[in-house]
Image (cartoon, rainbow, N blue to C red; front, side, top):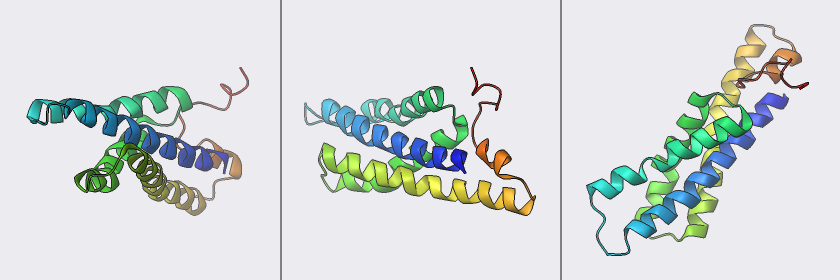
Length: 137
C-alpha cells in the first residue's frame, strides 16, 4: 500500500508544480497582452518538465506522472485559466487535479494486484521504478 500512497503523493506534487509553473509561464508570456502559438507551445512543455522532475525525485514510473501532468493541465487548469484564475487558484486546482487523476491509476494497480493474488509486498513496488533492494542503499 505504500507505493499506492506514493503514487497519490507524486500525482499531487505533479499537479501542484504544473499549476504553479504553468500559470506563471502563461502570465509571463502574456505581459505584452499577446499570447501567440509559439508561446502556447513553449508553455505546453511545463507539464513535461514537472513530470520529469517528479519522476527523477520520487522514482514513480514516467508514464504515470506524464499522464497525470497533461491530464491535470487539460481538465482543471485549462478551464480555470480560461476563467481568469490567479496563481493560487491554479495551484489548488493543480493539486486537486493531480490527486484525482492519480486515483484511476491507483485503482488499476490495486485491482490488478488483487485479481492476481499479489501480496502487500508486491503492491508496495507498484508504479515505482525502484526495486526493493534499492531502498536499502
